[in-house]
Length: 292
Image (tube, rainbow, N blue to C red; front, side, top):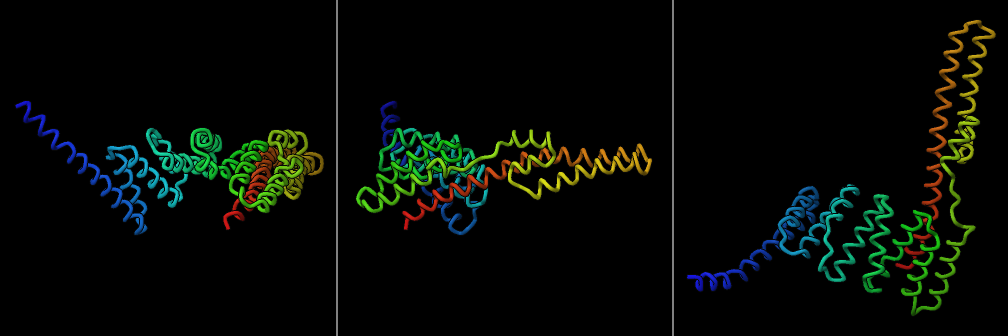
């Protein structure tokens, strides 16, 4: 009886694995069809089901990657990143591991989680063949730019240029000059310190916005703060409405004095963001030019 049971299992198990494999591919095919028809919400559910029921890590990884792509297409960047945080990189071939880690890095970058993006790109650099890792260098440089690690970003771009333009000396020299020009210290963005902007706003109303580079914003705050002081002075010394004058004037003064401090921090961060975007756009121009 034991012999019969054993032989039965030997015969049945390979077919069970085959049926399971076919079932997994069927689930992925259904999800792919839904996605191709533009039914992203339904495709997301189907990919999640496929990932949940997959018996091997490769199929599970593919399902999660495709689910994350659908979420990104739906504008749900944060959920795309969190979906890929569930990936298990064990026993994946180099190609799939590169795709998984690169997309994890990309979605973290898009979600402004720059340190996580840098972490994934560092793993690609250390553990995957140069043929794979070289393709991630531009994103690596952009992520490093976001954290102001200029020298490391420059090294990534030089490595990228030396590899992709190795057989074209003219292109190699042209891109080398462009990269070094971008990362020249005098061309790096000059940032405003939000804490310093706040301090200036506390000392002299409007000076925090002026420090951040917003003249009209600074002028408006200064005028309104001075107006509050003027109204209080008028109420006390001219109209003789002491309490009303002080309360009205102080209310205007306090409102715009506090608002000016908050506004100064906001504008300093806004200015930094604009300069960072402009700087990264110059790097993107180099990367995009190479693709044509």
